[in-house]
Image (cartoon, rainbow, N blue to C red; front, side, top):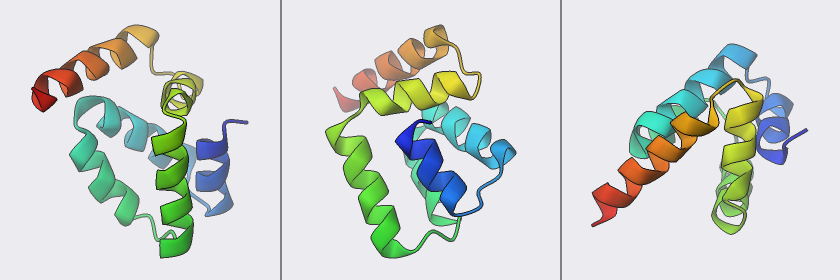
Length: 86
């Protein structure tokens, strides 16, 4: 299992919430951060999760695909994020 999803499951985050979170991340990463903070994950675990995402960004794509978000949607989100950074 993807370590991001495993950590979310460890904190009893439902499949529906996991999908909602990754969908939000694809649409607006900042909005997704707000959703993550509402999940009730302890700060130290949240910090571990963020470190995991920062050091292994490919895990986001794997997790998104495992919850049914297509590769095209992932690539579109990446392009949108890059455009926002410019």
